[in-house]
Image 1: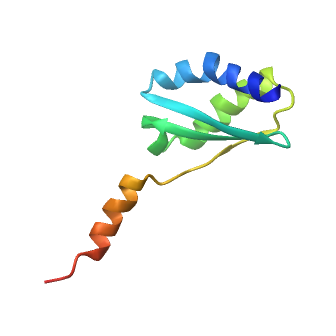
Image 2 (image 1 turned 120 degrees about the vertical axis):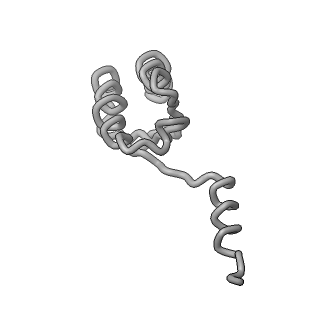
Length: 94
């Protein structure tokens, strides 16, 4: 039930805000009051991501879902980025 409440708050409050900045968010799960999220779009590489997580995502969730203690940003490197890095690292010097 907590998962549904978290998803509702993300959909109704957080996503519209991030959408204004060409970003998005994915709810990955919750365990012991710690919500795990992934930022997408422009938000994924933004230098203000920590501020966004603490002041937008965490504040919104804590206000409406008392079970939420903390929000944790999970960063993933895309396969596309990994492939590009592999190509760069595998180039032989002339």
